[in-house]
Each structure stands twice: as C-alpha cells, then as structure tokens.
Length: 377
Ligand SMILES: Nc1ncnc2c1ncn2[C@@H]1O[C@H](COP(=O)(O)OP(=O)(O)OP(=O)(O)O)[C@@H](O)[C@H]1O
Image (cartoon, rainbow, N blue to C red):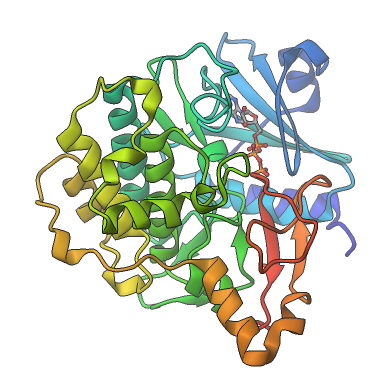
C-alpha cells in the first residue's frame, strides 16, 4: 500500500477541529533533537520521546516510523477520536505535526509508565501496588471506558484495551492511551463489521472470529485486564505449569472450585480487602462471559466496582475462550484455514499467537495487530 501524501494528511488533519499543529522544529527543540536519552518507549508504530514545550508543558512525543503505511490510518484515527475529548482517565492529545515525511503525535506526559511495564513488568519496577492502588486503577480505567462508551457522542470503542495502553500518572491514576484503532460508533448501529484488530489474549471471541464489533469487545478486554491487575500476572505466562498458563481459564477453574481467592497476587502478602478482591475477580469473569449480551455496560461495571451494585454469583456464566473456539472450528474441518489468518502486526517483532490453535512457533506479545479471520473474507 502506498502512503497517503502529506497534502492529503494535512487536509484531513486541518478538517479536525481543536487540533494544534506543531512545527517539526518546535518538537525537535522540545525533545533535544529527539535525543536517545529522552526516548521513553517504543510501540508498534514508532518511538516515543519525553519532551518539554516552550511554555514548560511536559509532553510525550510519538514519532511514527517514516515507512509505516499502516500507521497513517492509525495516526489520523487517533487525532479524529482524541481531538475533542478530555477526561481524567484518558491520555490528553495536544496535537500533531505533519511536515514532509514526519508524522508526530503530541500527548500529555504521563509519569509512571504503563501497567505492562510496572505491575506486570516482572520485577523491573519500584512501585508498590497496594490493594488500594490496584482498586483505584481498576475504577479509573472503568470510568474512562464508561465515558468513551456512554457519554461521548458518537460513542467510541477503543478496540485495544490492554496493560501497555494503560499509563499511570504521578499519583498512579490510570490513563487510557493509544486510540489508533478506535472506532466512532453512531447511535443507530448495533454493531460494526470490521477487520478484527487488537491484541491476542484480550480479543472477545465474537469479535476475533466474526469481526463483529460492539462495545462488548472492550468490556471483554477490560475483564481480562481486571484479572491481571488483581492477580499481578499476565493473561498468559508460559513459565507456569500448563494448567495455570492462561489466566482466564485459571480464573474460571478456581471460581468453579470455589477458590477464586487463590488468584489474588501473592506479593500482596495477604494485605488486601478480601471482599473487594473477590468482587473484582467476579467482575472480571462477568465481563468476559462468552455471550456478549451478558456482559454488562461499563457504567454498570463501574457501579459494581465501587460497590453500588451487588455482584450476584448467579449472573456469572462461562467465559468465552478464543483458543477453545478456534480448536472447535478446527475440529469441524476448517483447521487448514486457521493457518490462513492474515495478520498485520504493528511491530516487526510481534506475531499472532497465544494459544495452541494459532500458527505454530508463535509467541505471546503485547503488540497490537490487525488480522482478518476466516469469516471475514
Ligand atoms: N503519554 C505518554 N506519557 C508517557 N509515556 C508514554 C506516553 N505514551 C506512550 N508512552 C510510553 O511509550 C510506550 C510505547 O507506547 P505506544 O502507544 O507507542 O505503544 P504500545 O501501546 O506499548 O504498543 P502497541 O503500539 O503495539 O500497542 C508506552 O508503553 C509508554 O511507556
């Protein structure tokens, strides 16, 4: 695919209100000429630098790789979606730069990295995630999502809720980031049929398999995230015994045995509110139920999290396991097609994978990807 030319991008960007256009020089000055020591991260579409604008505002400057054709669409989507909205649990987009081959996004700087790099970062972090902090993070993400799903018009489906897209500010308040895959969702539509995109492990089965997108896909991803925050482990961990490797399967297993508390992060050393932790785990399971219509809307999930609505055990049915669904389809004779899932990973290192039914030799990664399922052709 050929990259859209700069004039076209500028025309699209200028049509979006409330977007500040930065000059390349301004951003070069802000980041010390994109100095390596100012690099704070790297995602599928480019490198992120810390910077300071002339008025002293701290910013995160995301520079899209010059050769990324995939990134241009995400770049424009991010601006279109983020330009008009502001919420304490969403990263703020200040503006962008489109000059020659440069495509750069400028966000408010969020001090404490992402949940993927801290809580789930395998000990490379000095932050103590107490129970209260975890609870505050879950509630904050739920507030941000409820805002996107129910308050903004048209509604916004994020499509890539996962730990690396939840940043933590100086007070460890969460901010949802990375709206490059988001979809604006007019009121009159029940769902959007789209090429499925997101991150394996967080994808709702109905969305991954049939590419049928509704807000319930975000709610499923949020459920997986909740389980990760309470358990302090990733949705998949190959170092664990086979039966424990998949967090959602493990959570359901323990729940059925009446032992969900075993899932709570042992690094809390028992120092947590057991009632709240159990409630969070149950809500994680409620959000990941196989039938999308059984997953409550985010405003209800939020009320459950803060204890305004009772969480009733009878409400919880079996989660949707994408891996299982794929195996089932494979058993019914379409196995060879599974290999044909076309996948455009957003980073050269990422591969589609996470369950035994995906192509062999694949690896779990947090990278976002776009792929076309066998049902979406
Ligand atoms: N506003 C921000 N403030 C501070 N750090 C940020 C900000 N935005 C991004 N980062 C850092 O840059 C890293 C890369 O972010 P980016 O959104 O490009 O990719 P990602 O979400 O990690 O991966 P992918 O693109 O595959 O989803 C983040 O993990 C985070 O550490």
